[in-house]
Length: 284
Image (cartoon, rainbow, N blue to C red; front, side):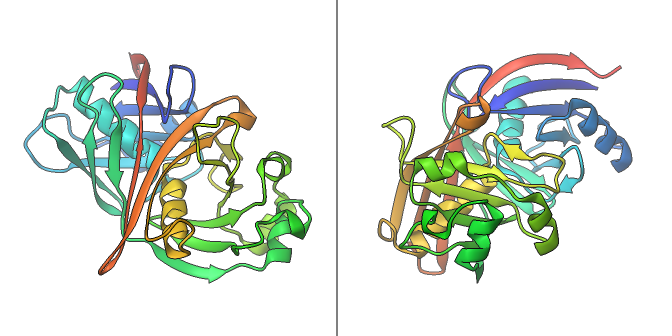
């Protein structure tokens, strides 16, 4: 089986979030996919279960080193790029059939071009206690942003979206893993309206302790939740476009583009980024 390794949400090679895309045998067993994902040991590995363009959605499965996911952002963009460029699939957009449903990805036909995915309609869960959230991140409560409360949000995977006061708080945050396990917490996506790069709008980090990764360098699914959260709470009105930097603290600089707007029946969310090819090979 052939595979590609690409960097997603990367402005240059050897940055962003690593992804292995395997062009797999359709009969490959789930347990074998999980073992292959553990062998690559990236945040995610995807398996494309068809290798011909018949106009139908492309069946894709997504695995972390520890489990299968119904949806994830950087695997969706990276896999779409791999299908478009390695299998020479044209058109303005293509559709991936993932566990969460069909996800449309547009763009990416030219080298260095942005790819955009339309995420599913966001759902908003409970608001989280400020003191408990601060303790989970080993911070004092006054390091959280004064104007907005942490909240659970999902566009396919549920995240705890946590607004922090400034970049220093983002840098200093760390996950209390015992408390995380005791609370059965969701992955935590924390952000602040202060950045390393003045061209960007937000800095963010993602902590998790259950997918086989501890900190993710670029999290497209969480960035979509952030976009929805900002629109719901009118942080910048009923519409937002922004640049989100992530991964700086772990030496994997990433850039995610987010867009969201209030519509009649909900909030429309898109997340975009660039993909850089790194390597290709085959599984023996």
